[in-house]
Amino acid sequence: MNNLNGSEKQIAWATDIRREFIEKTKADMKSADKNDVLDMKAMLKVADNITEAADWINARRNVKIMFFDRADFWEARREIKAAEKLAKKEDSGRKPSIRDILKAKIAEKDGAGASV
Image (cartoon, rainbow, N blue to C red):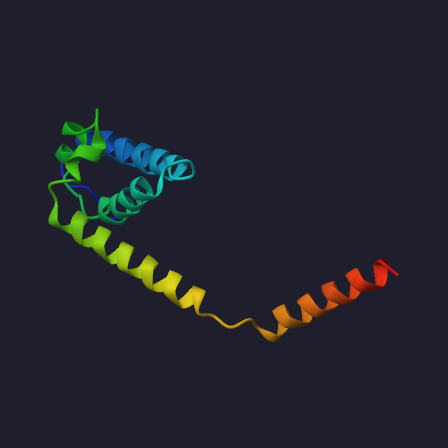
């Protein structure tokens, strides 16, 4: 993580706020809907770019709010969405590997042998 700028006291406080935000966001991603997860991924990507301790302290009651007026947040969101769309497209067109084919044949053979 990038170092924060500010007084020693501000940096200590803002470091705690940032750490808690990152931990909570990662935990919340497990149960969030698809659009919220996209926002959370972008926030985590951009969080390292927010280096002013005062920004973290001023937004401590609702840290998420400070992201929505940042151009780098929206750019990160677009990049993540495009990457996920590309990965989904590549995954859907992926041919099965030899290992997958062999596993399927073994399972098919085991299933046929068990019913005899």
